[in-house]
Image (cartoon, rainbow, N blue to C red; front, side, top):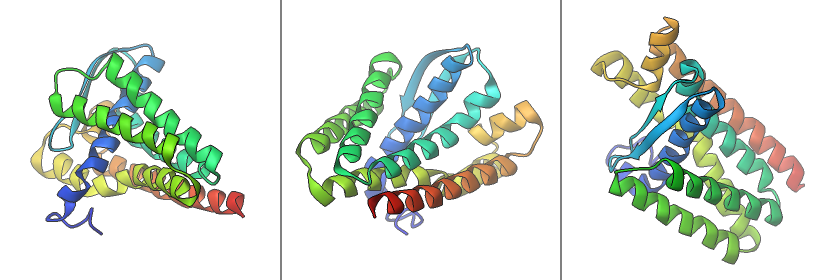
Length: 207
């Protein structure tokens, strides 16, 4: 509800930064996996991000941000049904962010600083949190990644159909000829399905 209330959304900016880092890193991983290279990643003070790539498969690169973040979040939720799994999930996310900062995040103080702070928080949680607090922290962060596509649907629709600015959905339209709104809906459906499956699996494993 806070995410959907513009006046309150700044309170969640730290979570937005975390999602943007993971979202952009998924673009970068997709570029490398399909034979391309990553020039750099930017994370801006507004919470938006940009990944500059060369080569690779554009369809995979453009769709990897939402698909990748949602899938990673779902895996975090399932893994974190136990303390050991939660600790592993937090350490894995912290390690991925660390590699992203070392390899690709360049030239943006907000992006670099927010990445460093999240790395510290993630490793601190993994080391010092215990019991239900540890499990809650990991599952909460995982769920925010699953829900990021849903939170971004309105922004995607506005950017792609009203403002005319470039977005992942608009990039998919340029590559496939299918309207941006279609891709926005596909991503939010994937995110919703990932949320439901992850919660069901985590609940079953915890029982």
